[in-house]
Every structure is written in structure tokens, then in C-alpha cells.
Amino acid sequence: MDLYLYNFCDIMLLARKIVTDTAQKMWLSVPFVVFFFLSCVKCVELKDSSPSCSFPAIYNFGDSNSDTGGISAAFQPIPAPYGVGFFHKPFGRDSDGRVILDFIAEKLKLPYLSAYLNSLGTNYRHGANFATGGSTIRKQNETIFQYGISPFSLDIQIVQFNQFKARTKILYQEANNSYERSKLPVPEEFSKALYTFDIGQNDLSVGFRKMNFDQIRESMPDIVNQLASAVKNIYDQGGRSFWIHNTGPVGCMPVNLFYKHDVPAGYLDQAGCVKDQNVIAVEFNKQLKDRVVKLRTEVPEAAITYVDVYAAKYGLISNTKSEGFVDPMKICCGYHVNDTHIWCGNLGTANGKDVYGTACEKPSTYVSWDGVHYAEAANHWVADRILNGTFTDPPTPISQACYRH
Image (cartoon, rainbow, N blue to C red; front, side):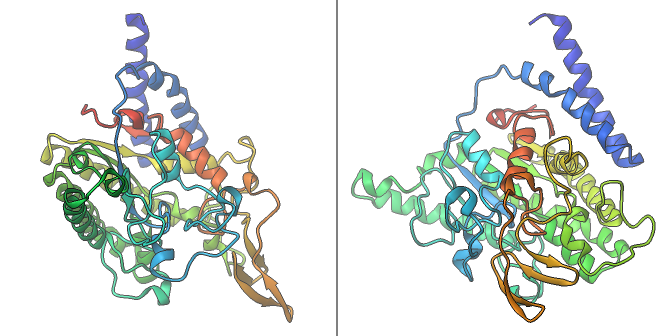
């Protein structure tokens, strides 16, 4: 590789950062920003010359965007047709198939993660998933039966991890044979594992329901500090590689438009999303990124990758037609006609008749699976664009997320 090309790539990657920061402050055209990001893909690939990290395990903390069976194990199982598109049965995921975490596992050539809360058919040799649908970073004073908020907030997930790490070490040492150890993590590999975080969206959703925008903004420093504390807890126990997703464009969930009629001018943005909610999401992500930058100085031996999931997801939502998807506000699974809403997999009544919330014929063309969560094809599209380093800071593919920059 000649010096000129390396210098060109360095300039492009620096310019990408400037464009991103400017877009957040000035709301530049999203298609322009996405085009600019995609123009940097080749540069990321060309600079990808270091050997892969060979992570032996993944430990994930999050909400329904990365839940692989936790909430189903703790409460009522997620019903069909969830999971049927890929797993051919319900599989604990809020999608017709795989979520982004599954694509992370595939990329790192590791098995899909078992949920920590699942007591049957689990294997923790290559990691565990502490995420549950409805989880928040900050503990909420309400139950899952009210608004779907999980009792397993991030601080509880960290407590569970601490217990998991201590107990599996004892069990591994007491095991009598290789078979007993085969489903347990190797104690020495916790320090070599990748620790992933995908949480914060529900903190904003709770805020939209309970607070005004100024109050939500005032809560943000505490929220991002609590996430930083979780990272430091793991760091103090030897964890060194962290992959942190920001929050997606919450204003682009079709559920936001339920019961909305004759919305005022300016309420929606050019992609059909609730503008004010996305403004809040962008502000949250700015504070999260700033906290990650500061966190790198507090845990100097850690490699922390900040992942701009917002940019990737909004890039898809604002360009669905050219990417082969239908209108992003269309919902694949469920019955949503006028003001009658029967959720995916549920039975309800419409016009005096029983109606089942079934799936559409071609989920692979939908962004939204159920009005809140993404269909597998959309998850795959986003994963393809974040795992190669195009939307990360530093611009590092996930296979090299163990390197400090």
C-alpha cells in the first residue's frame, strides 16, 4: 500500500468525524452524511491490517435490541411468529430472526449467546447475555406489567455478571471432567472477552412518557455516568475490550404514530420520524460519546469502541427505497388498521371478529418488524455497516476491537 493512499484514508476518516459532528449540530442532510460515511468504507478496510483479536467470548448488556431470551425466561415467552423467519420457532428475540448481537457473534465466529436468565439448553462456554427486553440504564420505579419496563436494569445486569463470573470460576475448578467444563467459561478468558453494551433507548422512552424535554436533558449526565460505572466495574475485574452502541433514532418507531391524526407541520422530519424525539436521541448520543472519551482516560488499559448505531439505522430509514425496503413506517407483524392495534403474535378483536396479529408475506423487505423492533433483514443491514468500522470511533472493525488507539 503506497503512502499516498494511506494519507488519503487518514484525511477521509478525519473528515468523516468533522462531518458527523457538524451534522449533529447543524442537521445536515442525512442522505449526504450517509453517502459520506459509505465513501469511507474502503478506507477502513484498507487500514484493517492488524491481526484479529480472536475474542474467546462475548458478554452483553442491554435491552430488547440485543435480548436473546432473557425476558422470555423471566416472564411470559415471546410467541410466534417471532423467531420463525430464521430459527423456525420463537427463540427469545424481538424480531422475526436474528438481532444485531447474533450478527456480532457470527462475525467473531462464536456461537449465539445464551441468556443468563435461561435455565434450559444453555451453554456459557463462549459468553453470556444479560440483556432483557425493556431494560433501562437507570432503575425505574414501575413494573413490567405497567409499561413493559424490565426489572433488570443495567446495575442489576452488572450484579448478575459479577455473580456469574464468581460462581462459574468455582464450578470450573470443581468440575470432574472436560464435559462438565465444556459449558462453562474458562476463568482466564474473562480478561480476553469482548464486552458489548446496547442500552439506553428505554431510558429515553420513559422520559418521553414522564418528563418534558428539559427534564430529559437534565437526566442524561446521570444516565451516561451509570453506564460508565458499569464499564469501570468490568474493567476493575480485568475486562479490557468494550463495544458500546449509542441509541437509535427512537423517533422513527412506527408505534409513535399510533393514534396520531393530522400531525402539525414540522412534527415529522424528512424521513417521517418524530423530529423532537430524534433531537433528544442525538443529544443523548453526544453526551454518551463525550463520556466515552472521558472514560478512556479513566480506564487507560481499555480499548473502548463507540458505535454510531443511530447513523446506520437512520441511514437505512432515510433511504429504504434505494436499499430495497418498503416504507419504514410500515409494520410487518401485527394488525394495525385505523385505530385498532393488535400486536404481533397476539389475538384481538376488530369489527366484532377475532383477529390474530400475523406476519407479512415478505419480512425481508421491512425495516420494522412489530412497530418497535427491527426485522432481521434490517438488523443484518445495520450490522453489515457497523461491524466493519464505518460507523465507529475509532474506525475499527469489531474483529480488532481489542486494540487501543
